[in-house]
Length: 154
Image 1 (tube, rainbow, N blue to C red):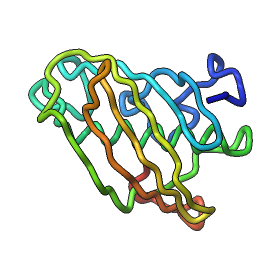
Image 2 (image 1 turned 90 degrees about the vertical axis):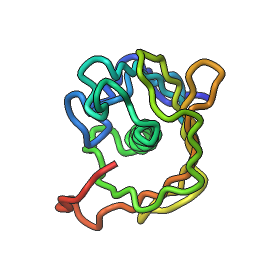
Image 3 (image 1 turned 45 degrees about the vertical axis):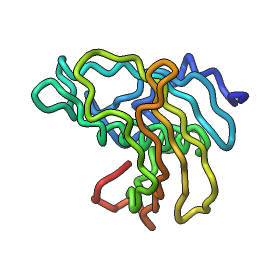
Image 4 (image 1 turned 180 degrees about the vertical axis):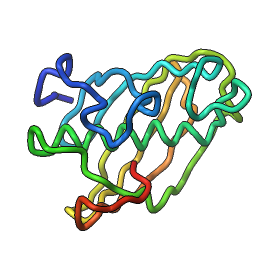
């Protein structure tokens, strides 16, 4: 992969429609027009917004994949444009290798765009801890026709 800009100067929070602790990704490792690789430090024993009783349910790992998709879209958007609101409308082929995470873990998150247009995109994603794949799946995101959509965003 070859990135189009210096990812050291990119603020992930500026690329996603999330704020505060819901910005789960911490670093953009690399990206190109079809895929992105990010890193995250996940600590369910701290104040993780998706954890319950100091455990992160494995299904929540799909949110890491969805955020990588949003970051990818933000990187490919016109410079200076706000994050584009979208809805995660389908999650398919979700495979989870664990029930939950109960300790701090460094995650590697990859998303690959399979296709789409201005109305929506189809991505595949994988979330790894070291060499082990913890979660993978496919997700479809549909974009709002206007910037006034107040629904759930990816």
